[in-house]
Image (cartoon, rainbow, N blue to C red):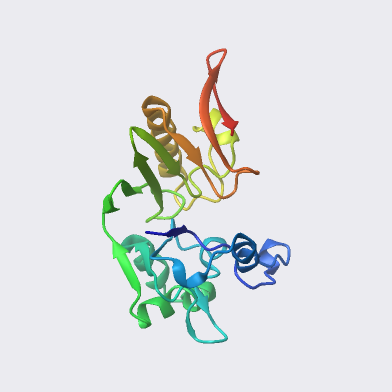
Length: 211
């Protein structure tokens, strides 16, 4: 089974992100990965910088044509239920449901052996992180719960982009505590390269150590 976690900003340019253009298809091509080879596209949440390549607007079809797309129901209801639905949600998320490939998750869900969607709300109401476990080891792909390695050291620090700041702090503290206690590794899309590593203690303080 091949799983893609989040889809970047999409074609662009996006004024909100300094006219950034996404490079996911280029990166996949360089790695020899075909879009049709994915079985699941796991969306940590429904923000545009994580869902921009979900749907091919030119061809009017899901970009990863053999995959089912997973999103938490609370994010679907939160963004799709607004009086004015955000344009990016109409472009990147709603067409997935219309194409019959969107699966909404409720609660913690193990959707493949050793692969579990964890509820980590705060940044958005339905934000999820992905836990991958095998042979006694684990990796948490934290999405925007950990938007910077700084939050490993100071998980109690408020993050202004969280929809619910207090809940975001509580989620972040609990997640970092659990990652350390379980000895899991951690990755997040907004971390600088290489983007993943360990949680370690140095003179009593927690730090992210890139690997």
